[in-house]
Image (cartoon, rainbow, N blue to C red):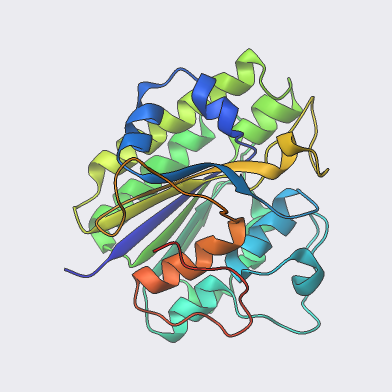
Length: 257
């Protein structure tokens, strides 16, 4: 059976938030995964620049996006969606924040769904249900699911590590559990974040902003194995390798297998 991959990104999720959120599946996923609680994102630790670095495997000074406003690349670097499409992989993109749309060109996706309701409660649950239904019907090679409530409803509105913030992570893991349990055996689930946060903000080089969790659960990964020296830039090369696709020559990250 061919490898299939689902990547879930929980916006603004800190590793200590995972540990304190209270959802039992957080520990279960760790036991089923190769994982890191000390992975590093890029500066500035802001949502769109971090996503661009995840999908293009370079620092922001190379892809050129340094705020939450997209700007076209002066020296374009091939992104993960574009690379997978070149190798005829079926890709899908589910999100709740429209600013992420430029992570891929529309003609490189089989399906694009955006609720653009990240400031509303239950948006993570809604987008997860849509993604599960799609995966079960269409069996894509790669699906990206963005969960935004932890950042907006939790972090920015009330504060990182507040009860509301931890409740948002708890709900995110409820979504992750339902998703993971719905996937066939040949699927790999990757769960990570774009950045952390402190007080009601992020974007600095503080450890609270720069440190993110990463879980990789699937046939190619050893269970309950701690990984070291992990970067957000390693995600795209790892996905490409799992799908039998060579990395773009400009990518700086490494495959974690």
